Image (tube, rainbow, N blue to C red; front, side, top):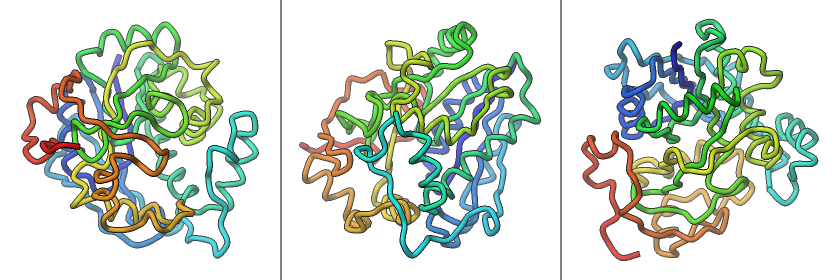
Length: 295
């Protein structure tokens, strides 16, 4: 049995280094996939540091020119109030054809299909984003639960901007669940939908009754780390997905911290230094990644 994880990459070097370290404790193959355009169809270089590649870390380049699509003059946008789970298929397929940022994100996430050539039915497959970490200390428990249920999702502690700055809620399913999925190779090969469809339907709440989620938290979502270097670039990458363009500004992170809230999904921010931080965090150089002031 092998454990394989797939995630897209954009430009988050520090997160990538921690992801590789955490994966190294228990993952057999970590597959990272990067495109040469952002989701707004703007050209970008391949940013991944290939010096970090090893037998366990695999890097895949996407030539996005023919795969991604430029933004439409008149686009539709995702909003949880207009995209309820009972209408998921209707709004999902509509957005894929009427919001090209949404479409382009799906195309990169669906490149997880490269694992079909290397994954056996007895293997364990993880579909995640780069900043979503499963706790390697819980590896045996995670694997045993997957073998029992064939596919599971997990709750993740949700930090934003700094390792110890947390959001009290996320859009969609609570506790940042139904984003990351762990499944058997058998389930992965027979899954009758794409990785992006799985994730988006989960966020909508449409899988709460069909995919098991353990009660305990099993990892972290460390979002928008190093905001001064990465936040604005990442916001620009998602601009085609976002209706409210006033959110796309260079002081977005600073304003959120001053307000002690995320405007979307209207979540309060708080500091917690007592969470069970990952081994990769404890064993990495994290200077400057902790909020040390008063929030």
